[in-house]
Structure formats: C-alpha cells, structure tokens
Image (tube, rainbow, N blue to C red):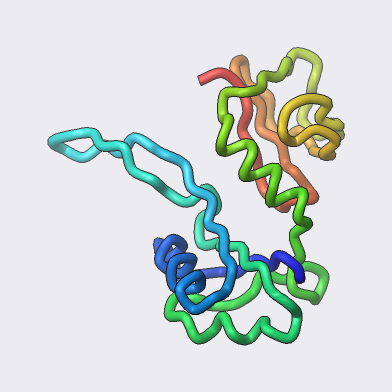
Length: 154
C-alpha cells in the first residue's frame, strides 16, 4: 500500500477526505487553524494545509475507486507516474502539525539557492532548497514532499 496525492476541486479537500473515509478508503487532509477576517468579525477557521490536495492510502489496483467520490479530479503525477508519498513523510507532517511551535531555525547564513539538510525538528534529515530569506523567516522548498515551507518567528 502506498500514499498517493489526489487533486480535488477548489475548497473540496475536507469534504473529499470525509467521503473517502466513509467508503472505506483511508485518506488524510492535513489542516491548520487560521484567523479569518470578515468585515464585522474575526474567526478561527480550520483550512487545509495543501490547497486542493488530499492524501490517500491504498493499493495500486484500488486507485480508480477514488473517482466514485464527487470532488476528486485526478491524481498528482511525478515523472509520468502517480506521485507516491513515503509513510515517514506523512508521519512528519502529522507530527509537525501536532507540535507547530516545537522547533526553531537560524537563518543568518543561508542564501537563496542554497541546498540544506535540516538537522532538527520533525523534518530532520530532509533536504531542502532555500527559496527566500527574510529578517524573521525563511522559505524552503522540500523536494521530497514537493511543497514549500515557511519557517521562522510568528
């Protein structure tokens, strides 16, 4: 069994994950809490960490079963094959979301384009490319996960 990445309709990530779980397909939609501003109030809302992406855990022969759920558009492909996410990467995301303030980094010597190996935290031993360095944050591209991570002080 592998973890695959589904591409969904915009704003359908949580619905798709719920419906997949309801039909017996293990899915994971990582979410974060964000403060949303309306004209008359602020409210904390839970939003997906990755827009339009849901992870599914299934066997190769079961891949077409996901299309029974409304909102699923296609699989994410990498080099002509469905993208497979390693189990330890899913666990790293889950761990990171359970302890979002559990690490810190020093960005004083990094320059855009540098390749770095993360030495601490939930992404320990992951390779990343520095995309941008700011005074209080750093934007990293985690190649193995195919995502961009902003780390630093709030």
